[in-house]
Image 1 (tube, rainbow, N blue to C red):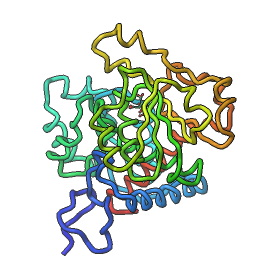
Image 2: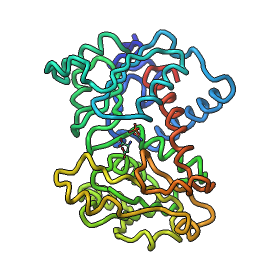
Image 3: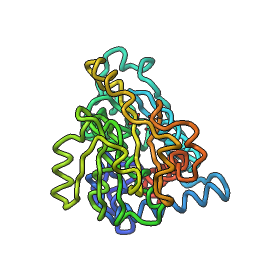
Length: 326
Ligand code: ASP
Ligand code: CP
């Protein structure tokens, strides 16, 4: 007997639904295998062609997503909502918790238990590292992390990897440079962990105080990746296949003088791009606050708007997969 129902946690699996996503929480990219990624990218391709052909479908008709965001968001919030609606489902939007009972002191577990009564899946963005794991413990329905503080942003990691594959047709053998706030950038943490599974050469470009967390560096080295650290964009500009630029995360600094000292550390200009490889992709999770000049946007290698569009297809695929409809 199948012990699963739509939007419930996995207890036992119906044979036809035995893939790595049905009924599962998505709280860290650590949980994925390369096969999982191949699977979800294939479903994302289908979602992309579906949206381009007909715009929407009723695959998730009758299903409800709770979008619970304790931190600001434009892309993740809107793309999850759009993804659910394009699949025929509906959304409970809690964007900023100041008008919810969180402002009366309600705890995360109780808030999650509440939403799990009404929704089939919960998307959570929270300022605390590990909040999604805590939420998953209390939720009868799948939790999808939309970013937990300086920890991870797993669905962004997936859409970033999908974008690399879409732009360059491969992931193995690429030289990937990640630039900016590698200490606080949760998108960097998720993408680097995913790249660990591929034969990539990773260069981390940042000022000394914004270096990649040492435990993540160790994870990459243990997986056999070559990790190079530098503070010079000049040193990677001519050789990188992927340049992944990030914002210095103002909201994560305790000492604003430190932020002021590093906030403008890197700027990608058209002059710099003139020295980059002819075939490469310039990526950014967005929002940008000066790290990539606006006149770079016309460069065909500027992939960040395609990257953000890909987010919707990846999230359509994930929602369909965790709800057993992919
Ligand atoms: N939007 C991404 C995040 O929430 C990147 C950023 O905010 O800089 O992590
Ligand atoms: N990339 C990203 O997470 O954007 P938002 O913070 O706008 O959701």
